[in-house]
Amino acid sequence: MSHQSDLIEKDIDAYLAQHERKELLRFLTCGSVDDGKSTLIGRLLHDSKMIYEDQLEAVKSDTTKHGTTGEKIDLALLVDGLQAEREQGITIDVAYRYFSTAKRKFIIADTPGHEQYTRNMATGASTCDLAIILIDARHGVMTQTRRHSFIASLLGIKHLVVAINKMDLVDFSEARFEEIKAEYQTLAASLKAKDIRFVPISALDGDNVVNVSDKTPWYKGDSLMQILENVEIAGDKNTTDFRFPVQYVNRPNLDFRGFCGTVASGVVKKGDAIKVLPSGKSSKVKSIVTYDGELDLAFVGQAVTLTLEDEIDISRGDMIVLARDEVSFTNRLRGHLVWMSEKHLQEGKSWLFKFASKVTPGQVAKIQHRIDVNTFEKSQISAMELNDIAVVDVELEQNVAIDPYQRNRSTGAFIVIDRLTNITVGAGMVSDVLEGDDSQVIDMSAFEADLRAVLEKHYSHLQADDIEQLLKKVTRSISG
Image (cartoon, rainbow, N blue to C red; front, side, top):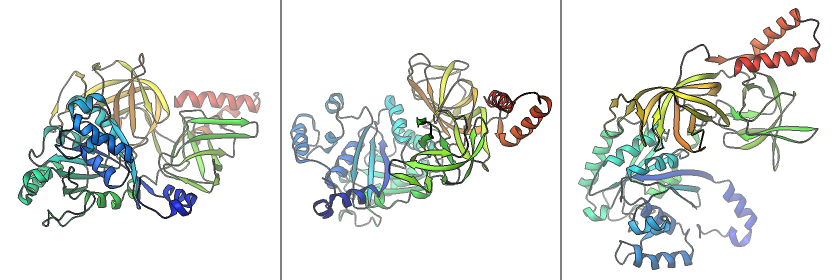
């Protein structure tokens, strides 16, 4: 199985604890059809000893039936599990695989190369930290190479590794490697990714995959595995802006009310002053509860339950933020939208929009332009079709708390859901908050204090509880 460790035999609990503390890297392989994405993943799994003997024997047997690698074992069959994938030698659906080394844990998304499955590639890329863009050394940069590179950049992936594969078929030519590298760098000038690395590999034979190959003495960089083990991703996460979408309200008894969710970004500590959106109610964090006990602080990625010092009406879909933070709270926004449905997207049609745990009806009010991912040119369209990427203006029926996607992937992303079938038909990334009467930078605490003073002055005959109910009704109405 995995990397060898003496702890497995001596102290399995210590080994599991050590394994749990390892940093997790999520990455995907993408590129054009038949560039060797599945073979590369199979090679990584094989060389990191993540294949059981019976699996390996089954793959050897299937190589004779389905493989296209001659006498060599077809490692792509480890990932391509669908019958149609094995028969055609292609990837259709996103396949996820897990492996680990002594330094890190990994989750790989193997994404399809065909244009008709571009939506599957976007799905696989949405949670990844790094993308491996495979390029066939014989063919160079293809249409899908450009398409997948653009989508990876659009989805906020900051680290790209351009793996120029099948170098064995061009005699490990340094000139060919440099030619493709220069071609891709021209493309990269239009991408947002700042960390781009180039590796010459042969996924079939393992050259420069785990170990640096002696067949490329002119290559002075790291192997692909060394890059994966050492790339710095800790700084990619937003640790400044605390965002906590409430997923569930836990009330096991009269003495406990906790708000469950995963910290989308930032850090929260016991005693921090917070406010809740959309109500604008404020309080302080009383405790941070987990299955293993209470914590003094929680950071991005942790699933926790927060309890507050005050009794506040909070529901699924609300957002807890630090009291000092200014959060965009709006029902009008602009963003990039990847359309994933055979149904056309028409302006003005009603859909459901999901932001973190918040779901609200809305519509695409205007399609600004479509982006041609092959040339990056913009064109005017009246409707979006399958796999189109466009800049759109969205109008929602309720206000939502959002951040620009490039600042915060968790609160800057949304999906579009068909109201009849409940199928996800689009994925979007917020770029701007649009100005309008319903848009605001929320600071409900000051507004609530002023409103309370007005109500107590003009409705002095009401009881305190009645004032509270009226105040709650008014603030809820204003905040949507």
